[in-house]
Length: 207
Image (cartoon, rainbow, N blue to C red; front, side, top):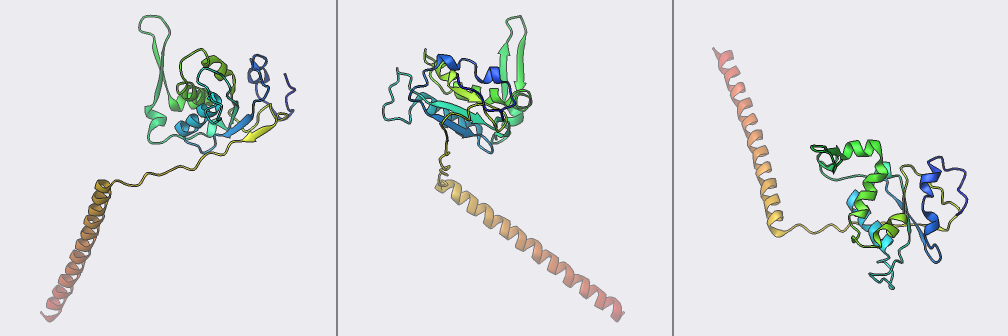
């Protein structure tokens, strides 16, 4: 087990737990920065690396994934209203003891578990899953105790935005034209109202 860097101020025992059971020979240390990243897209990239699917020697029944270090877990983002609408549920085993916790509360309690659950649920449920879980090290802040290792920052691929479908594009154009027509109609009504006011003032002055 390697010595930790003095800049790390977190739980060192938890950060290094199970590191001796991993065969670190020939593995790369990849660092993922979760700041500003979408949770699902980040988890899919981590699951690919931790399984070794980005290597030409990938074999489904052989464990050859790299070490994955995730920092700034507290700054991960989600789309839509998942922060309040997404729930984690579990049962204690007692009758009626179904517990639930929203994503917002889980982020406040332990943001590392949010990324861990997202990654583990993308991995195959087989005997290699526990070994892959050991290779995943997640930290809420921007520091980690593996500074003496040859870490490599992972560059997230650019998001590929799918082109709008023709039906949706036509609907958007119709909505824009309708909005423009409504604006023109409102402007014409305002002009007519001003003309009527001017005519009324002229009649009053003539009387």
